[in-house]
Each structure stands twice: as C-alpha cells, then as structure tokens.
Length: 125
Image 1 (cartoon, rainbow, N blue to C red):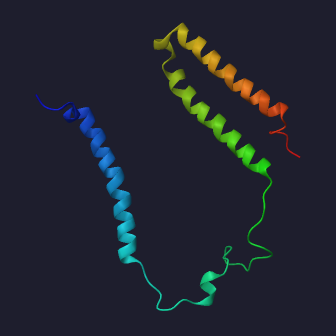
Image 2 (cartoon, rainbow, N blue to C red):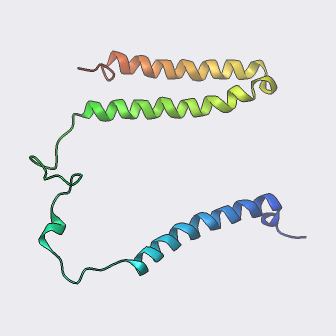
Image 3 (cartoon, rainbow, N blue to C red):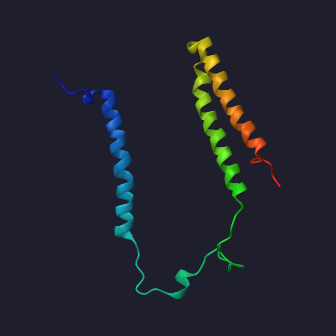
C-alpha cells in the first residue's frame, strides 16, 4: 500500500509548493549573483530620491491614523466580498440553509459597519 500523500491530487499540491519555494529562492539567488557592485560608495547614494526631483521638506511625514483606518475597513469589506462570490456561484446547490447563513454573515458585517460609523471611523473631515 502506498502512502496517502502520493495521491495524484496531493502530488499536484506538492509540485505547486515546490515551485512556490524554488522560484522566489532562485530569483533571490540569481539577483545576488548577477548584482552590479559599485567600487566605492558615493554621497548621493544615501540621498532621498523622489521621482528624480529634489525633495521639498522632510521625507518622513506623519499621516493621520484615519487614513489607515479607512484603508483597513476597505480591505476588510473587500475580503468579505471574496467570501460571498463562491457562495453566490453555488447558491442553487446549497439551498435555503445557505441563505440563512449568508444573512447572518451579512448581519454581522453590518453590525461592524454600524459600529465603525457610530465611532466616526468613516467620517471624512
């Protein structure tokens, strides 16, 4: 009896894993080997570079946390959409139970959205 990991479906997954590990490692090793090295460091190497223009003011600026909160909320609701797509495509096979489960899922999402609105996380000033 052969081991269960030799099943063809697992072999394809193992091949994908091997490719996912070997390709990036090969690219990193190749970049290291083929890298062009400067003979000496020049002062401009350590200057801030902004699209070929001389920077105006400090390169490090503080951004208001609201930008990050809005970005996180966008990512959260975007990922939830990814969960809804397979559900919508297989709705006929899933039946009425899937409708109830998705209603609960969307209700929890709306509770979170309502909380964010109530706390002012989405209000743009």
